[in-house]
Amino acid sequence: MYYIGIDLGTSAVKLLMMDGTGNVTRIVSRTYPLHFPQPGWAEQDPQDWYDQTAAGLRELLEGIDPAEIEAVSFAGQMHGLVALDEHDQLLRPAILWNDGRTGSQTEYLNETVGKTALVGYTSNIAFAGFTAPKLLWMREHEPELFSRINKIMLPKDYLLYRFTGVHATDYSDASGTLLLDVPRKSWSKDMLRLCDLREDVLPQLYESWEQVGVLTEDAAGDTGLAAGTPVIAGAADNAAAAVGTGTIGAGSCNVSLGTSGTLFVCGDSFQVHPEVPLHHFVHADGGYHLLGCMLSAASCNQWWCDDILKTSDYDVETSGISHLGENPVFFAPYLTGERCPHNDPDVRGTFLGLSRDTSREQMTQAIFEGVAFGLRECLDDARRLGAKVESATICGGGAKSSLWRTITANILDLPLSTVVCEEGPGYGAAILAAVGSGAFESVADATKQLIRSKDQILPDPDLVSKYEERYEKYRKIYPAIRDLFKE
Image (cartoon, rainbow, N blue to C red; front, side, top):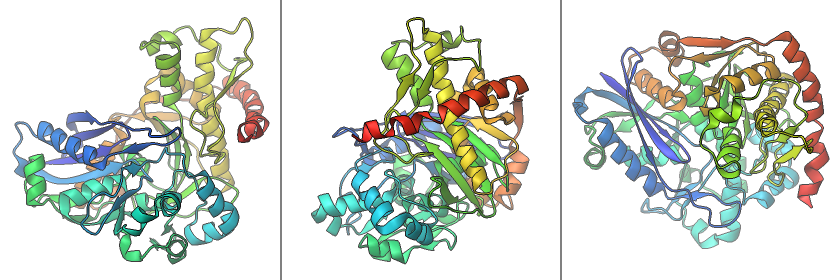
C-alpha cells in the first residue's frame, strides 16, 4: 500500500509516494510558469497547477497498480486567491502569496480597522500577502469580477476541488486568509462583513487529516489514479513541512531555509499581541503554532549566485568562508519586502559595511548570516509571546549547506537537527494521507513512528558570543533604512 503527498509550490509541484513504513519510494516534480504582469505582482494560472499535477501523477504511477494507493493528500503555497464563478470557472489568474499589490488595503486593515480589532476577529494582523487584502484589492480594482465571485479557494484546495468536486480547505491553510477566527476554528463574521462576502462563498473547513471526498471519474481519467481513491484535506506548506519533520507538540520548533524562511513553533495556545508581527495559526495536528515568515531566504543566495555572480556552483562560493562571527559585512535580506519580523512591503535588500577590501566570500557569508539574523528576530518575538524553544529541526534547500546550518545554529543559539527524509511538505502530506486513511491513530502517532533524526549541530559558546554582538548591530539596520524606502 502507498500514500501520495502532493506539494503545490510556487515554481513546481512535487509528488511523493510513501509506503506503509514511511519510506519514500518515488518522487516526481513538474514545473509551471510564474507571471509578473506588473512590478511587485505575482500570478499563476491554476489550470497549470492541475495539468502538471495530473501529468506528474501519471508519471509517478508508472508500473504501479492504482488500487495500491490508499489515499492522496496535499501541501500547498499559502494565501493565494483563487476566485471561481457560479459555474466553478476561474475568474482570473491566482494572486500569489508573494504578490505585493495590496499595500493600501493592508494599511487600511491595520490602521483604519485597527490591529487590535483584527486580532480580536482572527488572532492575526494584516500582511500584504494574505488573502483578505487581495479580496479588498479586487473589490476596488476589479469590481465586476469581484461581484461574480461564487467561491474562494486557496491554491492546494483548487486541486482538491478538481479531484473531488468538493469546495473545502483545512484549518492550517484557512488561518492564513485573515478570514478565519483561529481560536474558534470558524470563519469570522466580522471579516466577512468587512470584505462584503457571504459565508457560503468560502469553502467548508476540515482538519488536515480528515477525508474530504473521493477521486471522481474525470480526475481518475486525467491522473491515472483509481476513481474512489480517498482524498484527505492536507495542510498549508509550512504546517505540512512541520509534520514532515516531526514538529508536533508544545515547544517543538522547525526552521526552514526554503525560497522563504520560516520559524515554526508549536503550542497548545499562545499570547497574541497586535504589535508582534508573527502569525498565530492552526496546526495540522489540531493544535496551534506561531509562524515567523521571511519572504526571502534561500532565494537570496540563489539571486546572489545566479543573477549577480553568474555561477551555478554554489559550493565553490562558500569554500573560502572560515571566519565565522567576525564578518564586517551585513546583508538585510529584504529582496521583495518583508513580512516577519517587520511587515513592510516597501523595504528592500541592502549590503552594509562594504569597503575596498571586501571579498566575494564576505558578501556570500553576509547573505547566510542576514537570513539567520532575521530568523533570530522571529525567535525573539515568539519568546515574547510565551514560546519555550530549546532545540529545533531544520529543513529546506538552504539547510543542505552545512555552513548555513552552522551559522543558523549559532545565531539562534539552538541545537539544530536534520531528519532522514528531507522532503518536508510533500512527506508531511503523505503522512496526513496515511492518518486520514486509518493507518495511524493521529498525526502525533504517525510522526512518532515515521520520523527519524540524523545530524545535529550544537551551538559553540564562543561563536554564539561573537554572533550575539553582531546581532545587536544587525537589529539597528531596519530602523535606519525603513524611512528611506517609504520615501
